[in-house]
Image (cartoon, rainbow, N blue to C red):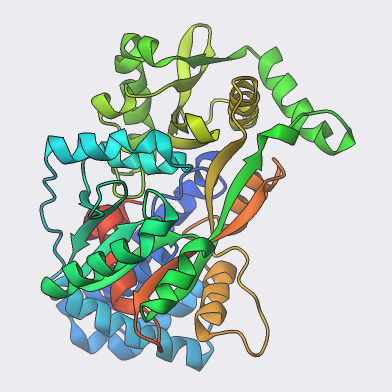
Length: 434
């Protein structure tokens, strides 16, 4: 009887995974916190199993099928074989994953910040975090922000600066990666970047779509917005109050914001991420305006805003709230931010990614698309894929594709995706803590 039962290590791993999934299923913050890259599900599942297998390699036959059929509700042998291969590969990398220390100089960060106002994407303001190195074009008018993880040199977003400078800067980055014996990787780049990638022998994989609201035509009039109007009206009747704090007022409430942030992290067993996501560093938060929701004078939610003022783009960056405060709180926060930014003359508001959204599904679609759709369909226990897309769709955004771009012309970018996941999560422990 004892031999037929799954090993206790596997059962414990499954139970812990189920607890994480159940604890956060359906929560509003899951709609707003794409805290890991879209490959999180595969990495989490394979790393979990690989960790168990490192303890007892004899568990493979009975443990792997038990775990994956439980997690995905899917027993198709092709899927199991694919994921089995991934688990073995992930297990080998667990022992060697390493993030190099990133120590950009203050001068480099200041040079990069000085270029932000002349470019159109507010999300480039993440360079202020100081956790990424900066590679400048020869003329100094454009840069790539990047970090090294394992054997990957990972660039974040499109190059910052005039697009005519991108080709030479791209070649400079690839050369730097080769000198360090690393893979050049570009994370969350736009379709505008793809021709330059193709010219350099790089291959794109669609990560999902980014939701960008056109503020010039945003208003809450008409029947299409009725449910949203009701939601925010009820929130305000119940005592929720919105305000946008200009940068000079943020230091006055930084301790209260920190308290909200700590409460949010503790409630969801989460850790601070980085690289492509804002973190609660007081100096970073105080560098821009912050939208807050109060109840009876007490801050219960906030969102920091990055701006590219000359081009009218804004980006909702770090967002935290006290859990289970009010069902309409996030609707109120988003709508009032949009109205405020529109009144200030901003034209677009970036709501961030909907992971794995927009992957085409037909017989000629690449293997990556088929795999991504399987994760989208069966991965709801780990990440609310449909919920993220549905929530952001409320605001009638324009959906813009975003890609992972890597070297090589065939296969799946397993190594690059693993390194990106570890980079954003801050290592394996950070990945499992969401």
